[in-house]
Image 1 (tube, rainbow, N blue to C red):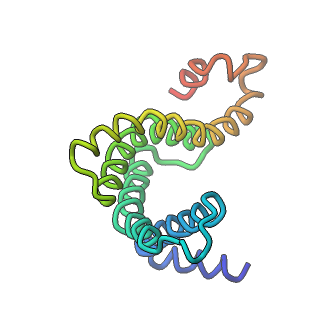
Image 2: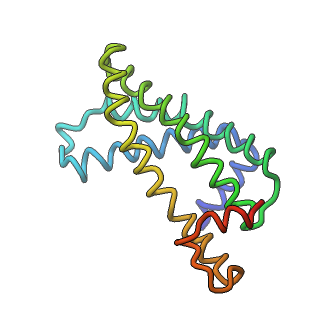
Length: 170
């Protein structure tokens, strides 16, 4: 708990720096987990350059872009209620995520040395799956929000009638 409190204090004192470093650290850690637990490379075959690339992407692109987006989102939709959170999530997933992935995937391709032609082909191949996967991952918070709204809906199935929820948020 002391480590968490120290992190919260640092975040309050230096939000931008901490967000950028957190994004870089998490992306580096994610790559280490991928190489060691998923790909089972072992320490001898670990691609340190790949991990450093992912950390650099986190610090130089993901952290600043996502941090900036959340600042814009908080100004655009002020408030902290569950309805506000659902609105923010829907705008994030519907508007920001497609654009972000459209920038992130080619950036990774360029850093991996792909030519413009190969990068475009890889984007066309990977983008739909990446976006769909993002929606599966982003859907968990939405399901939690649905569960919170179920008593309000009084018998209307939120999962079968999402347009009803959207109309209630307007």
